[in-house]
Length: 339
Length: 241
Image 1 (tube, chains in turn brown, orange):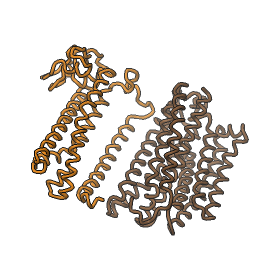
Image 2 (cartoon, helix red, strand yellow):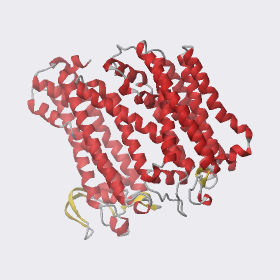
Image 3 (cartoon, chains in turn cyan, brown):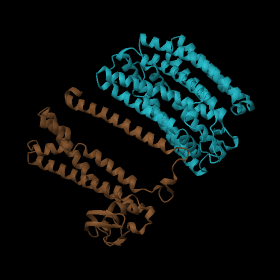
Image 4 (tube, chains in turn cyan, blue):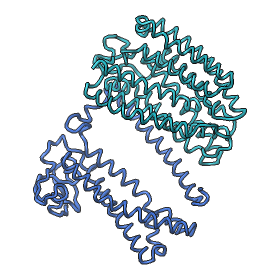
C-alpha cells in the first residue's frame, strides 16, 4: 500500500511537471504576445503553438483527474480552498483558448487587438497563478480539524507565494521565448533570444531569493535534503541545465537551448516535489493536520486499478504527443495565414 | 438544412445550397430517426437504475401495472396527481419492461424528500420528445417533397427549415436539464445528497459570483460566435474556402 501511495505521488508529479514543460512554452509564448510587432508576427506565434497547445493542456486535466482519484482528500482541500483562484485560472484559460481560434477570423484591428489582449492576459494569469498555488502549498495552508481550508482568497496572495509565482512566471517566459527562437525566422527570432536572456536573468535572481526565503522560513521543506545529501543533485541540476541552455543559445543551437530549458523546469519542480514529500498539503497552523501521501490517498483497490489504466494509457499519450511534435516540427513562416 | 434553405430563399449559391440541402436532409432524417431507439434504450436503463427519475419524467404518481404513457397532463405536485391527463394505458410498461402488464413504480412509492423537482423534469422531457418528433416530421416532409420534385419550390418548407436552426441546440439543453434535475436530490445515487456534498470552505456568495461570471462570459462568447457564424454564412461557401 505504501509503495502504491508513493508511486502515485510520483506519477502525479510526473503529470504536473509534464504539464509545466509542455503548456509552459505556449503560456510563455502568450506572455510575449503583446511584445510582438504587427499582425504577421502575432499570427506566426499563434501558428507556432496552434496545433500543440490544447494537447498540452490535457496534461493539466489528467493531473487534476489523477489527483481526484488517487488523493481525494488533497483534491477536496485544495480545490475548495483555492476556489476563487481556480475560477480565475479557468476564466483565463477559457479566454486564451477562444482567442487563439477567434483572433484571425476577422480583419478589423479592434477585433484582433481585443483578442490579442485576451490571449496575453489569459496566458500571463495562469503562468503566474500556477506558481502562486505551488508557493502556497510549499508554505502550508491553514486547515481545521477536518482538513478544510480556513484562509481566504486574499491570504493566498502572501509575499512568499507571490515570490514563487513570479519565479514561475519568469521560468515560463524564458521557455516561451526559447520556443519562439526555435519556431520563428529572422529578426523576430533574434528578439525572442533577447527576451529569453532578460527573463532568464530575472528567473535566476528570483530563484536565488526563493531559495534563501525557503531555507530560512520553511524548515519542513529542508528535512529531506538534510536527511539525504544525494537529493541535492536535483537543485544542482537546475543550475547545470540552465547553464547548458544559455550555452546552447550562444552557439545558436536553439532547439538544444529549448530542450535544456525544459530540463531546467523539470529539475526545478522535481526539487519542489522532493521537498514536499510525503506532505501534499502541509498545514500551516499544526503540522499534525497535514495531508500526506499516507493519510490522503484512496483505497488500495482504487490505486491498483488506476495504476493498470495508467500503464496502458501513458504510452498512448506519450506516443501521440511525440507524433504531433514531429508532425508540426520546423519553422513557421510569417506569411502563414492559418491563425 | 437551415443555412441551405436560407441561401435558396435568398437565391444565392443556389447550386451549392440545393446539393447541401439534400445531403443534410438525408443526414437529418437518419439522425432524427436514430433518436427513437437511442432514447428508448436510455429510458429502459433509467427505468432499471433510477425508477424515481422515470416516474418523474413520465408523470407517474401511483405504482401500477399497465402503466400509461401520457399524451398530455399537468403534474400537481402538492397533491401527488396529474391534472387533465390524456394517456395510452400499458404503453409505459411495454416500453420500459417489454411487458404490457409489468408494474412500474410511481412517485408516491418514494419518500417526498427523495423526489426530483417535478416541473423541471417533466416539462423539459416532454418538450424534448415533442421537438424530437417534430424533427422526424420535418425531415420526412423534406424527403417527401424531394421525392415529388418539389423540394426547392415550397417556400414554406424552406422557411420552416430556416426557423428550426436554434431548435436542436434547445433540445440538447432540455435533455441535459431532464437528466441532471431528474437525478436530484442525489449527487451519488442513494449515497450522497447534493445538499451534503457542498464544499464547507466555499461561501455561497463566491459560488453565486462565479455563476454570474460564467453567464456573462458565455453570453459574450456566444455573441462573438454568432458574429463569426453570420460573417461566415454571409460570405458563402466559395469565399469561405
